[in-house]
Length: 502
Image (cartoon, rainbow, N blue to C red; front, top):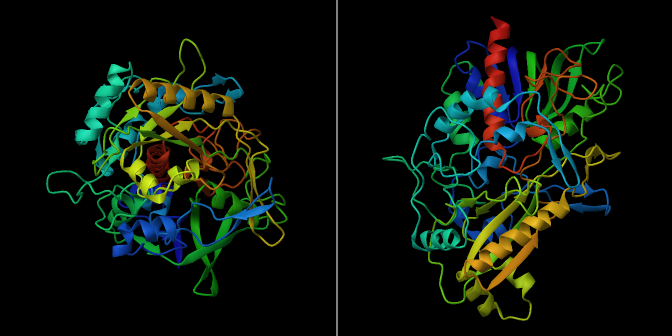
């Protein structure tokens, strides 16, 4: 069978596009290398999810600088990495789409502006049941409508923490969260949401909110356990004719009129590079030489703020964010980034590493008294930070943090804020190369084929029936969680594909 559209990958990009095409009348095949993540007791067990890494991809990528393999924080299931994400779905700021100067470089402008995505942001928020209150975030972009649902209620400790932050001069606000806490919704506000799969399908992930609704259409088909090996083109290299896949050990080719790559920024780049042929000797759609380059994944740290006089009994902690430093301060005029509370840390690994002088019982006590923060700064694009393939086809990652001085300024500002808010000890941990959950940038879009891989609708400049709709298209990483922007652009691209076929 020849399909109208084959979409490779079922995360927020691929799932978003399948959803956008579900009523188009086109025959759409969505292929996913994994399967549905099982709903099982282990979903909520820290020993299984954190210690045993039960759901994490069992493969090795190579850190180019060290030459050592590492196990990436990547998940191959229907819904992609959103099965395990923390469900924070903020919009990018208006300025994030413009060129911005940083101490260590420049964040480039996007070929579209916030206004181009605003209606699709709104649609994505409705699909994912996003809860927040408009107007509380001091950097919030303009909105034509309120959030679909009110902010998640804070439990006692989080409300007390917000009061202390306000007393210290900050402006905490409700982090936009995608959970099904509607009247009659499935969310029970459990402790295992951030970094865990949801056994109840109550977390707003691409599986529950995009793929399953898309499959209600008779023209959308899902094929799981199907690995895309390479894309095949006509002799001139102008059009893709088929994708070669492996399923249950068997190799076959699947044909379509249009192909969409949405495997995640690393695997999408790897697929394009593996698809090199005589017409595209450096990789498919790589006339610019940028496929795989400008790999970004945010510069991230955790801060565990410990108050020895107060126990944190909250179950669902992830309800607060702070953007007071997002665009800098009078003392430091460069954008620093975002602070957001994590889901309550379920294991004491961070504390144990920082305080080896203490006993396991003391580590556990500190963990009960901590407020846990995620500190996120923009990872600036660098062409030398890139995805390449080893001779045996293994993925190689070269990434050196670019914007580290600014990130450390944000850590310093956050530490000072939390100290003024009454926390006695702050434990800082910088996230390593393995933390790639916000990966982006390896097939940037733009207005010039010489300096970009894709056009503003994520269509490849070099191949007339190829699109890439995961976060590969980002020219910059900003300092916001990327998933909502990926979904919004996928909805926008889907609309454009439908128009082009009419």
